[in-house]
Image 1 (cartoon, helix red, strand yellow):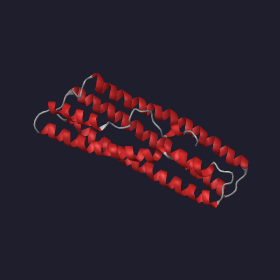
Image 2 (tube, helix red, strand yellow; image 1 turned 30 degrees about the horizontal axis):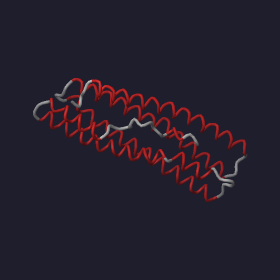
Image 3 (cartoon, rainbow, N blue to C red; image 1 turned 45 degrees about the vertical axis):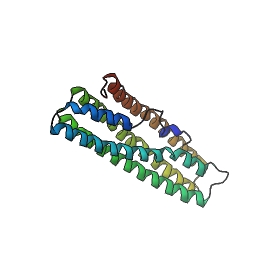
Image 4 (spheres, rainbow, N blue to C red; image 1 turned 135 degrees about the vertical axis):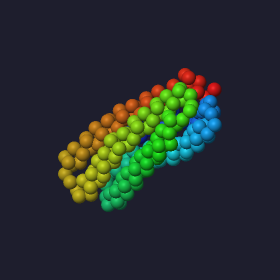
Length: 205
């Protein structure tokens, strides 16, 4: 679990920045009547879920460092086991909350595809939804299994299982870290694809 890249990201944001959201809302003004109002309402709600997802992801980013701080010590005892159990429970709850925000974010963006707005705006929304779906898979298919493996490691330590069993579990976790890191890059690529489309098509102009 020393590889913090499992949940860290480059400077490219997971979510659209506040300025980008404002720019997109301005672009949506090309709609007419109530369609524009509806689009703005959906974007405003989506932005709130983006912010919430970002806050949760910040906590998830701290997991590798927290894990290492607990167990990278000369001697692991009951205090570390208790803290490790609580840490994995807390981070599992964070992943569940992260997934819930992603679902709501997508739910707020999806109706824009049915509104009277520019076709390029709709394509941008499709790309954002594709990125959200990638993040949902990252959380469910990669982070949750990784955290559960860490929970398993805590119990192996707690019950004083042989060193060979601990080593095998550590190797399993290392493999999951690598897989999660690869999936993370897919998510970032999907995000970048949407952001590049936004910029290339001058949607905020």
